[in-house]
Structure formats: C-alpha cells, structure tokens
Length: 429
Image 1 (cartoon, rainbow, N blue to C red):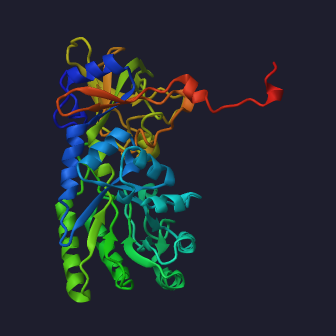
Image 2 (image 1 turned 120 degrees about the vertical axis):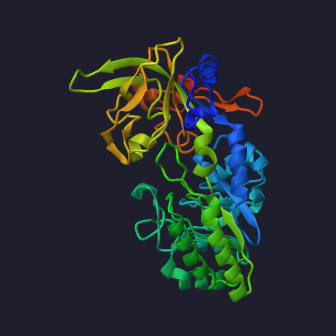
Image 3 (image 1 turned 90 degrees about the vertical axis):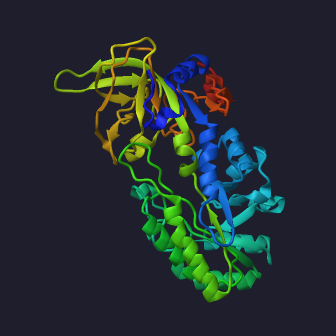
C-alpha cells in the first residue's frame, strides 16, 4: 500500500514502512532528516530586521541525532532543564549556543553558566540566585506578558493562569534586583504557549517590547515558539512569514523610537520536528463490540510512545500498510494502544480525550503495519514510558539517501529494572 501524499505519515512509503517493521521491530520512531533540515531553513528565514537566532526547543524531541541535524543546519538550543543542557552538550552543542530557561533552578546551574551556557531567569528567586552567584554578569529574564494562547489550557504558558516567567507587573522588582547585583539584563524573553493565532502572538510581541523599554541594557528579545503545525486536514498551521512580518515591523518601529536595534530570537520545537516523525507499529488484534458498539484495531504502541491523544484529544494521521495485498476494503475503526488503560485511545474526538471518533481505515490483518504520523514532537519525549513495564521504543533516522540508522536502541527489561533495589528484609521469601 502507498501512504497518501497528503498524510503527515508520508515521510515513509509503504515499502519503507515494511522495511522498518522488519529491520527494527515495532513500535519504532522514525525521523526524516530532509524534513528536519527543510523546517530548519524555514525557521532561519523568519522575518527579522536586525539579526536572528533560531533555537530548537529540544524538549520536543531530545535525541542526540535530531539535535545534531538541527544544529548542523544552523540552529541553537533552548533547554528547559539543566539535564537538557547537559544532554545538548553531550550531543556536541557548544555551551554558548544553549539558553537555559527552566522552571526548576538546578543546584548545578552555576557550573553550567561557568561553562558558557546562557541563563534566563524565570522568576524573581532565580534572578536573585543568579545575582548572588554572578554579580555584574549578563543574564536574561523571562516575563509573563499577561497574555497566553494554546489549543488547550494545558498548552497555554502565558497569562494569569500560568506560572512561567516573572509577572509583567513586577518589572520594578526586577529593576531593583538588577541594581542590587549590578546585573546586565541583555535578553528579555516571553512565550505564550502553543496556539495557532498569529494575531495573539503578535500582540504578545508588542506587550514584550513595552517591557523592553524599561530595560536599556536589553539587546535581544526572545519571543519563544508555539508555532502550531497541521498534523491532519482541517487543522490550522502558523505561517512564519505571516506571523513574523508584523513583528519585524514592530522591531523597526522600536529602533526608530528608542534608538536600539534588537536582535530577535525564536524557539520553535513542534514546528521543526512534528511532521518529520512517525511511529511504525504492528496490528496485534482486530476486535469488535457488536452491532451497537465499535470495531477496534489494537496495535503494539500506545501511551508508552504517544500520550498526546490521551492527554489533549490530539489528532494524528493514521494509515494501515498491508503486508500482503488485500482487496482495498475500508471500514470505520477505533485505534487503541497496548496499555491496560481505557484512556489508551489513538483516535479520540478532536480536543476531547474523553470522546471517541472512529476513522475510516484500510481493513487490516494481524501483523500488518499501522503508521501514526505527526509524531516527531512531544511523543517519544513525553510518553508514559515504562507504563505496564513496556520498554522504551527505539528511534531511527531516515537519512538523505534513504538509508535507515538506529539512533536509539530498544530498551531491555533489564534496563527498566536496573535502578530498583530490594531492602535486605525483603530479599528472603
């Protein structure tokens, strides 16, 4: 079977799906190098009048090979924890190309800063800790501009319901701390969430620039990411040129009015990797609940690889790839995962993880492949790993010439268990 060209799982042909299934087993993640590089080029073309740094929000997919492909293409790194910063360094990223913007202030943050990692304070307490450790140093500050956006409240990281960043009314407290520690606040950062409305994003940019006016030392403004992609037909996608052109104009107007040419930073994650990734799984059963119920396709993937449908009611393209012919018949199916969990459903109602919405799919046989597209972002990185003791799935990179490379091996049960320990009193039966 040939996967439809308009499917986000079309990074693979039907023959390639079966090749992956046979060579690596399932479930398995596959990432398309050409797709990653194409998206990196689009991000680096974001409209900017005075220079641009595009950072990969590596939390979306932190595999070293993915990081290397994107940084080789010219991107820097946005790290959301000290562990991510270390992981990026281990992947070969220059520490000076990493911006650490984290909810948790790690005990070893000072060591990372000494190695060259740039620090972005996300609260007054973080700014105080940085000032005590590095008086007189350069630092960034993340502000919550009072506005947010997202396809659900769970992806909205701006506004009064979000804890991310210093609340915009606390500008004077930041200025006081800047004076106290003689800090050079050279970067001002904001991020509103993962919405698709460019007007909301542009309005947030205006609010952020209003805060920048209070900080004469700021030379760079970081407007985060949150560029929505369309995984399935009917979903909105952010046009970077459409969203960025008014922002570039705002930066030019700011320069004329304030005499400062601000460098722009953006931090896409989903935009770069979502549709460059797919999960190849195997059909393990086909069952039904009678005339009044549903027909189900059970696969050997699920919440342990992709949590977004269960968490958000997120939609992903799904295609069945027959191993042997077939008569082309289709029917309506719910696709469910392998976890012993009623919420492990891969075809929920859009935006409603409690609802069910059957898909019209090729009628499969047990052993056929089923591909879940749009799985490059927040899937491997955010799954319910090891639930029901399922090992982590392997990851594979499809290179420019069509060859497949294992970039993370399948976890063994021994690796799942290796950090467990029995106290002595439980060792005897």
